[in-house]
Image: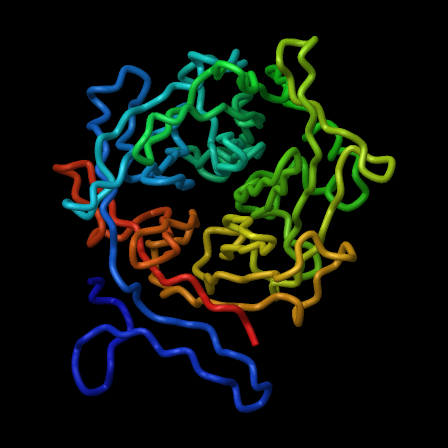
Length: 391
């Protein structure tokens, strides 16, 4: 267990504060402290994968689970990583990597960085979303002049989905096509992309609220997707940036497959527009991930920039909301995560069911050294119990 975690005054045993009631409001206070346990994610060494150059276990950026199958992404690659839970080992193992360039025509090629930050499993589909963000290069010995270089990686504009093939025993495989006998034909599809970007960035550049932030790089309150949730043909996209007036932003898209145009996804009109915006009052925090479950939206929060900040899990009981602003009293904070300087920045959230019940799994950017095993290409994710319904 992390020796930097909160400890009791009597001994050095890490603990989580039990949920209690706030005497002022009567509402349940959020859980806080270290996790119940950690689960290892064990990957293949990158040297064994032709399309991967960096150690995957050090750059896990998103998670999604169905049955015993966990899908993960590394934000330095253009691939989906699949692992399967082994109850005897208490770990996700049997890693297989699926390069997306083998299925989709990517404008920057099969090796171009996609910066995948959104994963979701819904209705038998695996949804995948890139950050759509610009990035600023470091000075690299050039002084301040080196900081004026802002780059665009075309693969970052990816938003698409793959059908999942049920292999039995809780194991699923992302494929280009599923055509079961007597069933529904399902084929991989994505938004149309080119080397200049995709339709989402082009439309949002003219948006009166988001437009001024589209030319800014990520982590500087520029446009930056980090969360993704889906239900049916509707998707919700959570932004790390911009945060506007202390409100985190969620974009709603309703996507329809256009079979006549090479299995493309196309945003449909919502009240006369191709998208809808929501502002969530998170008191200045940004969205690091989204997860939709049984009509409830869960949000993983963190900082817009690289600064250390509070990181929490929130819940909105009614989603989608009746208005485009969700005030603070409609957002329930259910979990506060430990904050470490320089490591363990909350990055991915998903739900995983075992015989004991449902758990929340949380993965981290810049994972702390005590959850990394480089020799075995392993990283540990935190396990917290699913929060009970608010009062």
